[in-house]
Length: 276
Image (tube, rainbow, N blue to C red; front, side):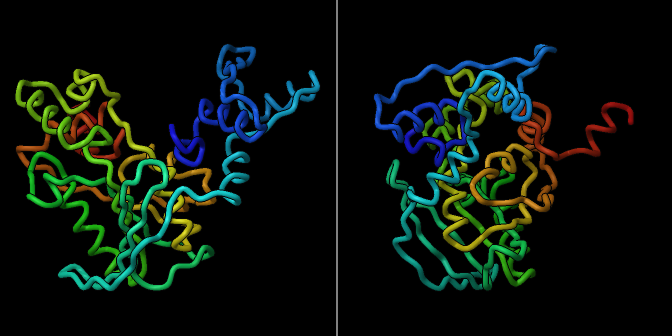
């Protein structure tokens, strides 16, 4: 991805970043070292291998920390007061330097890195957030997040412009048409040629850091979101559930998110179906 490990904390991005930092042509060889049992070797094992063969070694996290001290892929371009029916917030607009997208942050209270901050990273959903679509739970999650931050008296709601889990509005509507034909939300994305979830959280992590967030109590049902925000100088100290009661229009959608994407929702109904 453009922006390298500051955009996506991946090994492929790390290969290219290292080449660029070294001032050489941005192309490299990526291979995976296996442990004796055939699983992927982890950092402690790789450190021993590096020592044994006198290899230089760096982690993706260390590369992110190096770049994040020297570079920034977001720019704060506007800020103002936003009174709303869900509470009073300070609203900030950030512009991504990699794709010129504008992202928003609603901030309540004083934010400091040392004190855990209630944070919601919410991906844009025009159909749900604006028009109140019942095909998803996005609008209800956004409102519940604003309510919780208002009650807490301190927190951040990050509104990321990555519609349809990153595939864009047009393709999301095409995916809806496929869902009308019987495909679930994951199958529809894949039939259109996309992965189930194309969102990245590197830009969002930089915005949170710029706002002064360090430790987070993250409002999410998605464990992968916690992983996506790790390694940017942020620490998730607690996952705060944000489950919304299903309706007849979105129950299949939520079930697919639970069973295929690992979201921690509809747990009671799953236990009932499994006979637990």
